[in-house]
Image (cartoon, rainbow, N blue to C red; front, side, top):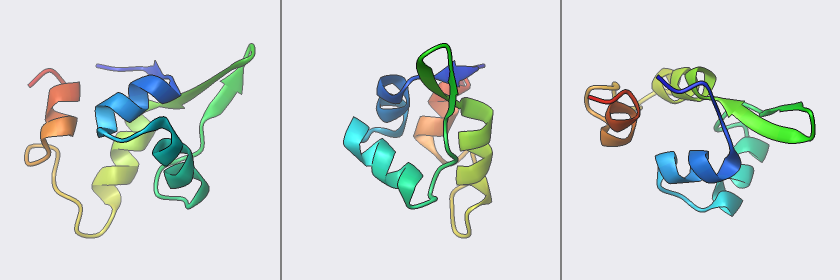
Length: 72
């Protein structure tokens, strides 16, 4: 299980560029990150829940990216 992930890790998990991660965040397609100690991180469980909750989004069992993130 993943905890908090950096922009580079999140981009890799979502198979997008880091710029796209920021665009998705700005547009509200993924939750905003948290900032602490000079670091910016996304809570993976929030991102995952947000993706799964979007209308028409595949279930975690159908999404290879989400499935891989859980080690399935």
